Image 1 (cartoon, rainbow, N blue to C red):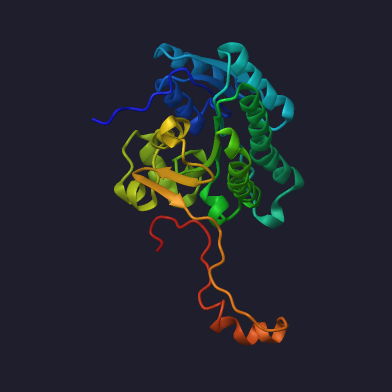
Image 2: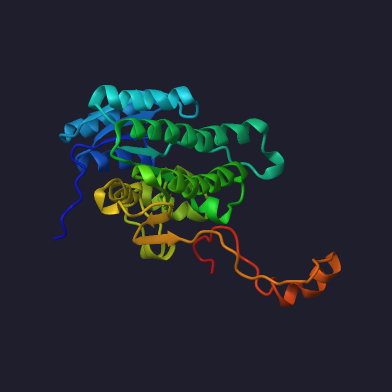
Length: 304
């Protein structure tokens, strides 16, 4: 059997760590030996997560605050240092949903999702890296992006924009943090959460999950969709010394499928000496750069 990864002596913060994917990550990090600050806006969820970790012999404390502001980020860092003496791993997982189609989305729907996902990732990462620099010895930023940020998703203007921005954070911060030994990666989780369960095509599978049944291979292998516990090992790996050389990447995990996502890149080009007119673009588009357009959206079960 392969040796399990150990995080003994490491200290992690998991934002949104009291429920769903965050809870699975908090438990997995603690099981690997890390001390964990479980952040959540829900006090009872955060404390229940801490109690569960401690009942298994792990070390954990709660920090109840809504992620987004610089003050909230600093509270999480301070809690780690006060309780465990240092910080080694920041898992920026906290998020909310306010799904609506473009024409029905309010300013508050947009702003609240951007505040938690995008600004919250920024403020938590900034506070963590400042602590890493002060301590020396490097660190780990593990961000949470999404397929919606890579592919787009109906009704998720705010969420998709935030998650695309988080992927860009990973690439940018990997450049900036490289010399201090801090790795930065974005996880694309494919976990059967409340959000996924709300999709009409997923209703039969939601019923299976509710009944405690295993998801079929068409989801676990075909879509790469599993439970939060299936995604958590990727966070443990990225937090470990085994992933020291991995940075600036978008990595997916769900069900039986582990994947590496490509960075956006130029795929075709054409030149016109002296520049292009609108007419030239129209005439040459389909025979040059427009020979095959890119797909978009997240395929559902039964779709090619």
